Image (cartoon, rainbow, N blue to C red):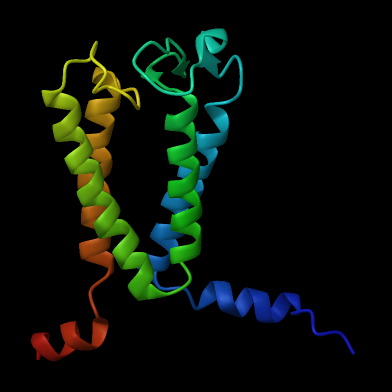
Length: 158
């Protein structure tokens, strides 16, 4: 007798995901994809200048967002965290809200550092900074809006 889940039980688990879990899974999947694409020549321009870390890397994902090996690995790790944390509603909410806060802090950091200094070790450029602002706001909004406990919300609405 096989202990492998049937497609029906797998489908039921996917259907039982809450909106916050689905959002965390989607965000995590996008981060995984971005982490991988940062290592693909052509999708990442000036790939031959990709460095492990530091502002010296001229490689740019989609020709816009400055990346390094470290930057790509961080995106990949964030993606893994999102996919894993999407398993429960509480962890999914934590991923989205915590990740949103981290991205807002990263946006502030990117705005105040000198882009040509050793402090720009990830590396970041203006496009990265504005993307981080959008990601921070978006992840926070998803976590707060979708992570509300429905039973508490229903009780308050009565």
